[in-house]
Amino acid sequence: MENQEEARRGGRLGRWGLVAALTGCLVLGATLMVVPVQRTGPRAVPPAPGAQALTAVSAGVPAALPDLAVLIGERERHLRRNPRDAASWAVLGAAYVEQGRRTAQSAYYPKADRALRTSLRVEKSAAAYDGMAALANARRDFRAARTWGEAARKLDAKRWTTYPPLIDAYTGLGDWKAAGRALERLQELRGGPAVMARAGAVYRDRGWREDAMAQLSDAAAAAKTPAERAAYLERVGQLAWERGEREAALRNFREAVRIDPDQRAAQAGQGRALAALGRTSEALSAYRLALAHQPSPQFALELGELYESLGLRQAARAQYDLLRARVRSAAADGADEELVLGVFEADHGDPASAVRRLRAEWRRQPGDRGGRRRWGGRCTGPGRTRRRCGTRCGRRTRSTGVASAVRCTPSTGA
Image 1 (cartoon, rainbow, N blue to C red):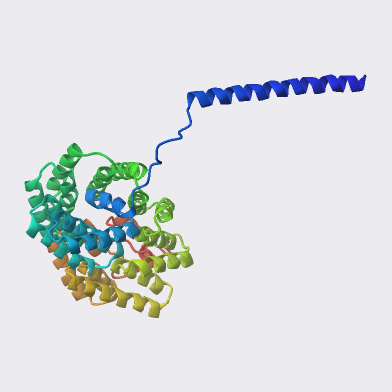
Image 2 (image 1 turned 135 degrees about the vertical axis):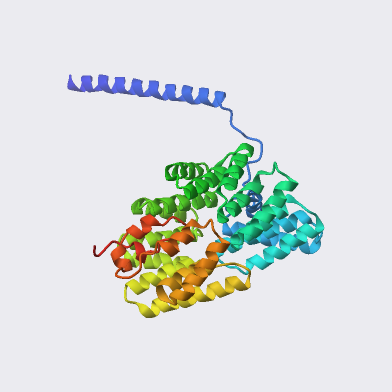
């Protein structure tokens, strides 16, 4: 009896298994009839690195460094054969500007200047004027940037890529109304992540931090390439840092570096946040890696101050020597890094020299609110030390890279 019962159960299970198998076959067959197999037609081929960088540079959005190098090589070879190609000279100049900015190698700026002026000699174009405006902004010559940007707008007022460098120039000169009007015009002409990121920067300068965070977060979510998304995440992290949100800043900086390992500003941001969280050895590693690939005077100052806070004076002096060397090199290439040197002198050198430098910078860059805070809102002074200031300094400063790691380490005293 038991054997018969088991046989009946086995038969039922077998029949249900057969039904399930037949049903699966029918469903699969129906699916294949509804969704035919694509047997013909080539697969979509991703754009070549040079083409990707060309798209980014032409739109004024961040490009991946390896792609930029490919684009520069392609244009240099092309222009040796076609020296009268004004458009290619403009592209090459813009690529040099972006490469110099991303690597902190100011030697790219004279190359960019020559390429863009060659383009303008061959043919006046808004693209070349835009490139000159971007170059002047990178050199922190905001008056020249305004002149070039307005020339581009006069030539083609409907070209949306003209407005971002013009907004930067107006902001650097403290002309907030003109920057606001330029942003409104940009938003009328174009949408998308690049415009959202630009709006976020303007809102941040105005102190509208919630609006700035919303725009930058949306820009990062909508970015089309890893390099672009990483750049916007770095700005999100920077804004979180300025709001005193160290853990959130660190998360965004780390994600930016994960997406684009060449995002050195985010790597230095990691160092800043890690130091503020008391994770000193990790902070040192992050700073060293960032400086090895992007020898920015600002990064050198921050790492030097971190070394000094740890009692490593010789290592700190090496970073301060690097800072001075990079400032001299930038000046030779037409770039202005006097602001960071003035900040350094205020804390570690000649205070009288710091006052002269920072006053001169304030006259040249009245819109640099971060510069004013770096000068007037220092955490040092009679009866005060950077350690005693603790995190308050970080909350009072807003410009990119304003508060160094040591100035915003956890307080050790009242």
